[in-house]
Structure formats: C-alpha cells, structure tokens
Image (cartoon, rainbow, N blue to C red; front, side, top):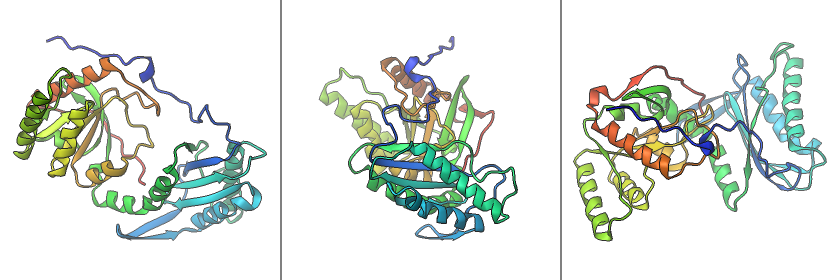
Length: 331
C-alpha cells in the first residue's frame, strides 16, 4: 500500500514568536517568567528529600538569584513578586504589574538577568565573559480569572515534580525521530506502551445514534478491562469519555497530538500524574509543529485517526524504531 503523507496546513507551521502580540507589557497584569541557566553554569540549587517533602538548598549562585528576585520591587516599585522558585537549572517568577510600567517588562527582566550576572562575577562565582542565564527567556501572559492560583501551585510544585521525575526517568523522556511504519513521530512519556500486545484504536463516527455510541463505548471498555490500550487523538466528546473511563479503571492510553514537543514541554495536571505512573504516551503526528498556538482541522484529525489504526495494526515488536532521542531539562 502506498504511503500517504498528510502535510500540515498553514496553521500547523512552527511559530517562533516569543512575545504575545496582544500585550504591550506595560499595563497591569500577571506574567509568568521562565529563565534557563546558561550552559556550563553552576547549579542554582539542589533538590533532595521525598516528593511529599522536598528540600531546597541554594548554592552561592542560587542565593544571589534569590536575593535579586526578592529585590525586584525595590528598583521597579510598579512590580510585585507573587511567587518564585529557584530550581537547579532554571527559575520561574510570577510577576504582577500593579501600576503601569515606565518601560517594557522585557527591559526589567533584562536588567534583572544582567544584575545577577554582574553580582556573580563580582563574587567570583563565574568568570568574566560568561553569563548566568541563556540570552532568551520565556514569558506567559495570564489572561483568565483563576489562572494565577494555578500558576502559583505549578511554581511551588516544581521541586516535587523534579523528585518524581528522578524516581521514574523513563516515563518523562522526550523522544525525537521515532519511526513507526515509515512515518516520523515525536513522543513523550512511556515509550514502552508501544510494545504492549494489544493496542486498540478508538474512533467514533459522528453520524452514529446514541445507542450506537453507547454500544461502542461498552465494547471499548470491555476490551480495555481485558488489557487493551486505547490509542486515538481523542477528539470527539464520546472518544474523550472513553479515555476518561479507561483511566478511571487504571488503564493506560496513547494520545496522538497534532503539535510536537518543544524544549520547554512538560506534561501538566493529570497528564503529569499519568506519566509518573507510566500510563501515558503522547505521540506527535507532526513533530516539527511546536508552535504554542497551533491549530488543526478536520483533515488533520481524520489523518490522526488513520495513524492510530495503522499503529494498532502493527505487530508489537515492529511498532517503533528510535533513530534518536533527546533528554530535556528537569522541572
């Protein structure tokens, strides 16, 4: 059978924009800032203990960074530091612009980054010509009510998540260039789910009656209870319902996505919990599409259902070949 290619459309192309075009970064609002350590820089902190009670110990450099974060409102009084964490190789800061800034928030962040580097050089922690942070940072504009509480929880939860990842490293790997039936995917999670004997594609037909939906759901859940692993993009509400019920009975799932995994990708919420127990594999059908606001339409979703069928139909020992894989940063 001739291999069919499904080129992603204009909406699926990678977007390199790092700043939100709708935001002027001057007016009041909330922003989550993430900054990574530069290559070769000493660790900012160490995380030890158990996941339920992490212990954070700052290095000399981490103490400098901590003090600079806490001092942000002293030199930019329009800003409030709501929450922050200094991880071994990156930091998160939740900032509030309480009063309109006299200069772009990016200038403030740049000043903070430069200040940390200058202080570290003076203290002899790093040498002249080196910088504490990577040149570019990532920002997330908080636009919805209630998101600030979620972001605070996420920031505080970083040490626990890191300890869990250390306990189960195989379940938190990003794999690039995964070849399945001649098609390249990216993957994140428990790659070994592809080796299970029985993968079952889940695909709903929109024209079915409720009776047909219910009968199909019963059939799927019966197979899942016997050990089948559901594989699907889980687009239709009825497919999502099957996924939820499968997870409720302790099953594992393989999710097909239309977007890939950039270097900052981390599973969120319940997906993190599923990864920690080895019950989730995410497959990116178009691995180069890593834009934050990518979109897919009917053609792409139909294609992903076809891919799920192909993957499930292959013998378990021939479903994958990893050409290369890339372990990313923790936290």
